Length: 181
Ligand code: NI
Image 1 (cartoon, rainbow, N blue to C red):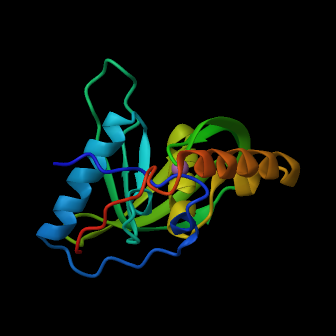
Image 2 (cartoon, rainbow, N blue to C red; image 1 turned 90 degrees about the vertical axis):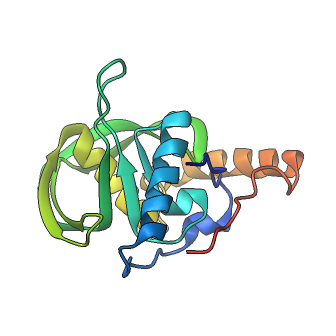
Image 3 (cartoon, helix red, strand yellow; image 1 turned 30 degrees about the vertical axis):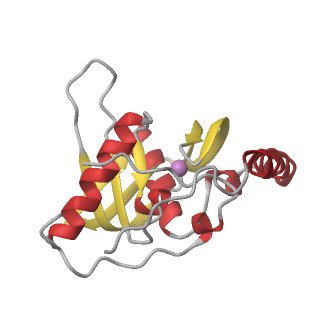
């Protein structure tokens, strides 16, 4: 297992639309292992593969409270099949936009279709933190960031800050390492 460098705003990879997983093989297992390793190290509660520079529709998640046993979850090719009309507001953050948090409104409940590591299909009803997290991660697979859901004024301000930071750190800063997949 390897902790991989995180792709950080304003890296354009974050705007890519990730491709569906078609082969459920050892390479996928390796990717997921690295994603968990990277996510737990950060630490974070959810990660999309593109955040380590791999444009595949894979999400890892663990919503277990700190000090409680881990509850790793894997969503391959996840898709929202229905959304509640009611909205809920949560303060969100993102490992690709470190140290920035803002309230985001999203549907309160969603039904998600996804595949497991063997390619079997499942559906899941999510509410609360799980609903927020899965919507945030599926957004990543479509090149959408949580800052796209806040006001343009706030978004411009945070993007500007990260552009400045990237310029200061130089291009060698957090370049993701690609592996063949
Ligand atoms: Ni994120």
